[in-house]
Amino acid sequence: MNLRIKDVAEAAGVSVTTVSRVLSNNGPVRDTVRQRVLRAIEQLGYRPNAAARRLRSGDTATIGLIVSDVRNPFFTEVSRAVEDAAYQQGLRVILCNTDENPEKEAMYLGLMEEERVTGCIYSPTHDAAQSFKADAYDFPVVMIDRAGPAGSADAVVLDNRDASARLVEHLVERGYRRIAGLFGNASTTGRDRHEGFVQALGRHDLPVQAEFVEPNPEGAVRPVGGWLEGNAASRPDAIVASNGLLLLGAYRAMRAQGAIPGEAIALAGFDNEPWTELVSPGITVIAQPVYEIGKMAMQLLTQRLADPSMSTRSLVLPGAIVIRGSTARLEAVAAARR
Image: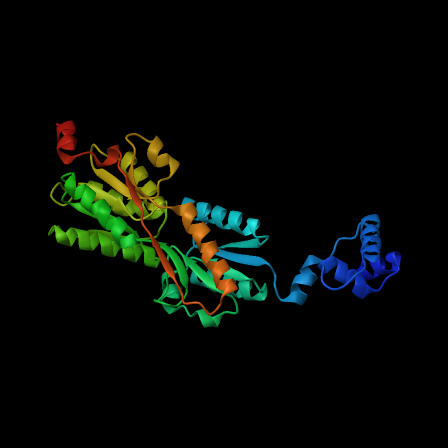
């Protein structure tokens, strides 16, 4: 049976306005009348139409979350943090996955407008980040993992240039000099990490060998295979991968050719996923504060909702290098080869 608020009013012997006041807990209602309405609601099994109430109030109590690749464990963990924080505040979450596709991205941003979301947390593609304008939307936006032009929107990101440079510095300290890099081609993150990579190599007058590829495991297969099959003079002695999926693809490509990380060639990358610790010899990575990124994004969004006029803020968080056997000292690797 599809009950209406009018049915509750008739059962309680009061007006529809009185029932509405009881449901919203807004407006004067005598205690005896309130109890009569509540009894009628319980007896009828009436459930208020929350969607209609949200539309009337203009507050949908819904957060949009647009991520670039839901398969990437980074975004899985970020999504969990956002959902946890939203749940604590009585907010719902609409999760959308763009696959780094600008058309899907535009469609989902349009969906956020249609759903009249309270706010949106969003990892943009490279082009969208560069051209982003907050006043183009009726809801506040917090960017994660990638940031737009300075002052365009609140953002929570990793210090990508520094993190990438630290991986290079670690490899140089271990004796490596021919360091190749794999970088995602669809986001500002890959470009920022490439910049840090190049800058660190430049400080040591080392050559740059890098490729921009699709940011997934398959994207790593061709370049890594080519590097391993090259002649000894051009073959890198270490590889850096700019995200966890590229790191996984690089590891698979190396193992397929019998090249064990830390023995035949060093391997390092981003994202401290469980597999990086479990495989032998263990992969050196930059561990990102992933859950903290999602949690802080929700905090920025909540603060923006409370004070829309506040200045935009960009929170830049450090990563932590986790050193494992895949970047053993080069002299040890050379000894193992003999």
